[in-house]
Amino acid sequence: MEPIDIGLWVTGGMLVLVVLGMRVAFAAALAGLAGLFWLRWNGFGYAPERAAKALEISIKIAGQVPHSKVSANALSLIPTFILIGYLAYYAGLTRALFEAAKRWVAWVPGGLAVSTVFATAGFAAVSGASVATAAVFARIAIPEMLKVGYNKRFAAGVVAAGGTLASLIPPSAILVIYAIIVEQDVGKLLLAGFIPGAFSAVIYAALIIGIAVIFKSVGPPVTGFTWRQRLVSLPPALPIVAVVVIIIFFVYNPFGDARGTPTEGGAVGAFIVFLMALWRGMRWAELKSALIETARLTVMIFTIIWGC
Image (cartoon, rainbow, N blue to C red):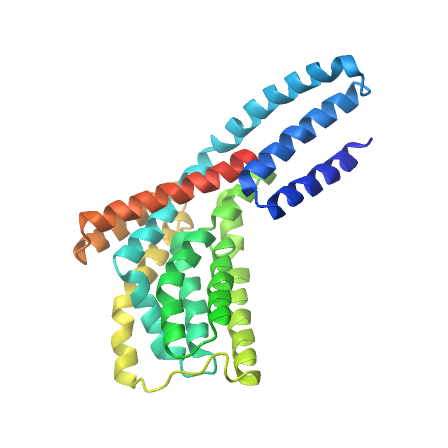
């Protein structure tokens, strides 16, 4: 059997395991081990006496490859950007970002959903993890949408779709992993995702407006905000914008050759947001929660990398 055929069968088996309820990381790891064994045994001509040898070789490879993947230096930026996102949430910066978006665009059909998309896009620029983005805005945006009569499934779908913007908008953890797999420059690949990510946010917003116009009960607009209220909402949201500008300038400095690595940019951003959080009165319990949730999400991402 050709290796490509083995790969297709193993991939199909992995999808079946995922549908049956197995965690993605473990399904990928099991499928990968089965694929390695199948390839080695195929090389031995499926000789029964060589099955044990094929399994031994497969287990050795399965023990070496995951370590080489997760030990890549570029992956060290993932926890720093996830930490930025959770620190911003517990410091109240994320809610301020959503509030500003709500006051400026909530008047359009499906306005709170559109506000959620733009707020998730802004948060994605400092978080880098789709799971963190969706988790944070599930706590902030969904209650707001349900309060004014949004359809529950529509509200959840908007947050889930908005969370995917973190896969494109730098600093995207997915793009970092992809850059390592295809052996491309991490910084350049992250920068390349900015325009597609911003364009996707605009497309999502246009689609939401279209759905709200056709199905008026899905997402009613929210009106009543004065220009003074809109202007007052901007200063609390500026720290997020400032962090994004600082990170991008630090990593992609267009005015000289002095540039930092994406990992260093993440560390600088995390330190700045940490200082902002302290200034806004973040307590030890909130800092502890941010650190624990960062560790949980980082472990989940690294487990998936290990399994794949």
